[in-house]
Amino acid sequence: MLYVLPAVLLLFSLAFVIVWAVDKLRLYLLWCALCFLCIGLAMLSQLVDIPADDGQNTMLTTVIYVAGTLAGGQGILRRSGLSLPLWFCVASLALVLGGVIYFIYPHPSLLGRVYVLNLGLACMILAIVWYLRSLVYGSPADKLILGMLVLVAVQFFPRTLLTAHSIVSEGTPVDFAFTPFWQWTVFSTAVAAVIAGLVLFAAAGADRFNELVHERDSDPLTGLLNRRGLETRMLAKGRGNISGWIVACDIDYFKTINDVYGHATGDAVLKEFTDVLQAHLRSRDLTARTGGEEFILYLDDLPSDAAFALVETIRQNVKAHEFSRLSNGAKVTCSFGVVRLRHKDDLWQAVERADKVLYAAKEAGRDRTLFEENVS
Picture 1 (cartoon, rainbow, N blue to C red):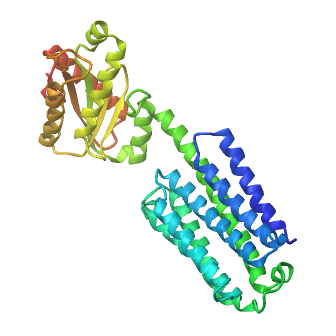
Picture 2 (cartoon, rainbow, N blue to C red):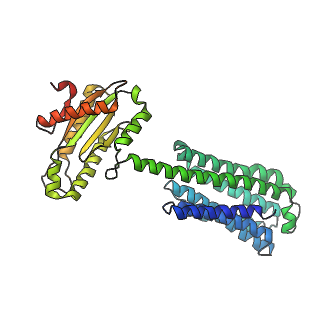
Picture 3 (tube, rainbow, N blue to C red):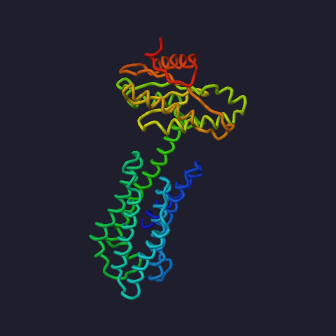
């Protein structure tokens, strides 16, 4: 039974490697694997007494424990696009290892070493939580990871402070393994490891699911919503209970751009056009590309004059924008058809109405914004 926990930790490490092998884009899983590997090896080293010298064993396992904690923190930070600063890693190792060495040679004390190592690791994890504090505003998976880290860090304090006194001598590793401190360490570490492993696996699964949903609901060229994505987001807003404006937008003479400059340039124009759109819309507005050069905007509830001003600003900025792949002086214009989306209106019926207004804007000469009430 002594070796069950190291075995469990090593199995979790292997599982992370296997999951990474299936989805190699998630490099943070390798850091998580290294975390479980290090902690498992450190515990195993203590149990089998390798190296046999007590001081050397303590220093080696301290380095491995600290490395494992840093690897786990690095992995979780990498998942969020962050990274542990080098100074933090060096300072953590120096402080914890330095404290342990102090209680090995100048002032030998097993109890002192236990306090330094366990409370030092707890403080490191809490510092990692601080680096990840923005996750409190993130997805459910983000919050779950943050809560898991707090739980893992906090469990060090009562376990160490309440049971460390049971270590009364520099006994052999086998004797040490039967102290209340070690038994509680095994129990709490086992629980924390299982919770941490399952939470990280669940987060990886949630990340993959969210990516698949994003791919399903997004236009691959511009990154905007597609038709399905627009409908899904409108449903999430409570489509039958919202009001606002539906805007049908079309780039004028886009076929000519493709014919003259080629489809690669046409794609570049679409991307830059998207950037101009996004620069002037609010976070609560929605933008979808529903066809080649056709876009649908949802503007969250605005007075009609404010909606007109916003759409006109976009139109004028598109006209003024210098598209990088077009000849000097070449201008891109666009036309807009705007209709009111009222409570209980069907989205696609409103889009159809907006398309008719857009058609009227093109018939009237293009490069203009037209509202439904202005169409005879």
